[in-house]
Image 1 (cartoon, rainbow, N blue to C red):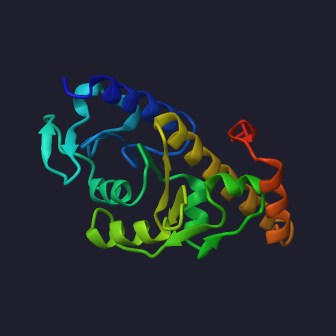
Image 2: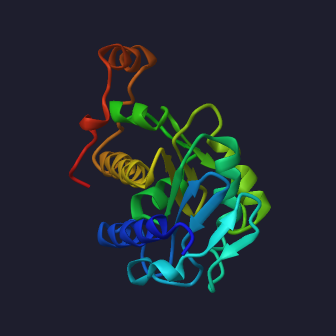
Image 3: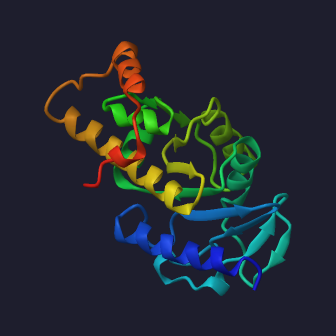
Length: 215
């Protein structure tokens, strides 16, 4: 089976996404790239019930390589992100707090210094129908400039990484940051970190080990 290990890893990440509430039902999708091939979750299958054989493989142009099931409808978005970034994996979620922020704001401001791990302010991509080239282009634009995550207006979020674990953790961090912001708004106006404050964090050398673990 082509990319057998990667397809098994997609199933594991799918279970972790469902278990942490980043997706419900068959919503959301995941992919991993190896060279010119991309293994992606299938459309219409619950992420916590997939098998490796369920996950099709396509080339970087979207052409089918192996698999009986159709790839996720969001495959064009995944391929656009791969083309524009150095990512090796992508996680797309329909998480609660991420969707709340994506439905009300144009960006997620730096309420916490761990925002820097996602490239700073998280942009909200303009709304477009799911699975369309327009949405792919909108998300690609939102992630320009070295961003590692974006929100999709009235839809959800997307995060990238150097491997599937990193992409998953970036998606989990995005949801945590959105949750902090939404909860803070219920008791007052959140304090947003300044450029000077963020620069001081960069100078201290922010490390992935500092990611929050309490999503």
